[in-house]
Amino acid sequence: MREISTQTIVDAVKDTSIRANLELGDDVIQALESALEYEESNVGKDILQKLLENAKIARDERIPMCQDTGVAVLFVELGNEVSVKEGDLYQALEEGIRQGYKEGFLRKSVCHPFTRKNTGDNTPIIVHLDLVSGDKLKIWVVPKGGGSENMSRLFMLPPSAGWAGIKEKIVETVAEAGPNPCPPTIIGVGIGGNFEQSAILAKKSLLRSLGTPNPDTELAAMEQELLEEINKTGVGPQGLGGRVTSLAVHILMMSCHIASLPLAVNIQCHASRHLEVVL
Amino acid sequence: MGKEYHLKTPLSAGDIEPLRSGDRVIISGTIYTARDAAHRRIMELIEAEKELPIPIEGQIIYYVGPSPAPPGRVIGAAGPTTSYRMDPFAPKLLELGLKGMIGKGKRSKEVIEAMVRFKGVYMAAIGGAGALMARAIKTARVVAYDELGPEAIRELRVENLPAIVVNDTLGNDLYVEGQEKYRILDA
Image (cartoon, rainbow over all chains, first blue to last red; front, side):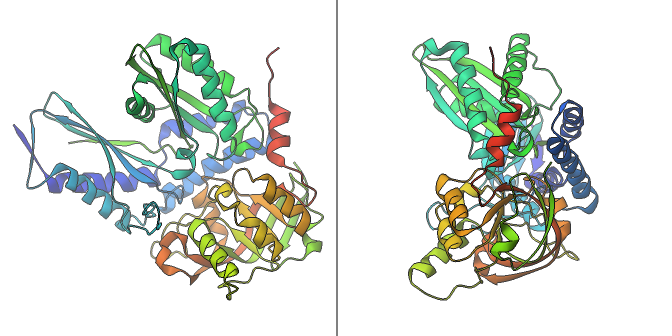
């Protein structure tokens, strides 16, 4: 067994949560630059340029790219040869977020559902844990903002809906969201599994870097077709009209019950924060 | 792109009425932040006929919950939040003389109608450009509900804060017009 101390985990999560919120990934920057060439609307071009400028200011001046530094979502792969020493894995992840959000001057955006009282330290966190083989602990810190999350949808479609039905629901979801999730967006799609699994797949699909093709060529073709359909809606940057409504569509798919065709659409704004650390 | 206007708060109906959807506005002066929880509290005070913590008449409310100010800065990132959540409260505030709202995303039919009736405008700032927007904010001071953290009401002094007029006093809607222009309909 390989031993990893909880302190190592706390420090790694703290550092990763700060960097994720201050440094927009090169994949998104490249996608915004490509979008700038494709966009026809002058207002749209101006917005894309300002988003690039915003990313530079955030990185250089060490402030968050967006004030909504989100709920902290963590995807964790724990190797079966790893033993966490001096405490509990979940508590270490949470402590890392607590320290990162305090020391990084990130916004605390978590509250009681009814009283709306802020918990004050951006906890609790949301953890998706996978047990894998090996002696590594891999953690993705994925801060997720409320504006784009609010526009996300889950559909339990009849199997007869098929690809045509799936396509219609996804395009409809993006069109109805319009300006609300701060387009240009990235559309995470989960197909199959069951009710909760489709949503987790949709969110997990956002971990893939923009510009990296889906390893499944059939899904890659579906992603391309969906992106073209979405960009016909005319929503455009910030919903003010234009060619670039979304930068990419990412799909993850798995088998499902013979009675079901679950579909989850997780909308992600351009501040697509997903940073991984391997311990 | 539309015309460009410089607005200085407080505003009169005369400042607002020439603005049309698609115009660019550059705002300077004092504006107030309020989002979900602060709106709920303001509405409770209005219903109880109690004094409000901020002036409403002639003012602009910016829907924002900034991130904390790191040492040496007046504010952290400060981009707009989605506006529809404030829709249930906005008509009443417009009736009380609110002249401008800054946010992002669509407004309800009721809010658009109230802007026509009471002469107000809704302006969009760039969602997700919080670091850039913060540059226009020169001072920030919590004036109410400090315990709400990011949702507290802040008085901001801004210089040249950029926004785009989405809904004007004639009922126009840039989100509808802009998207129609670029929509591609399959034959």
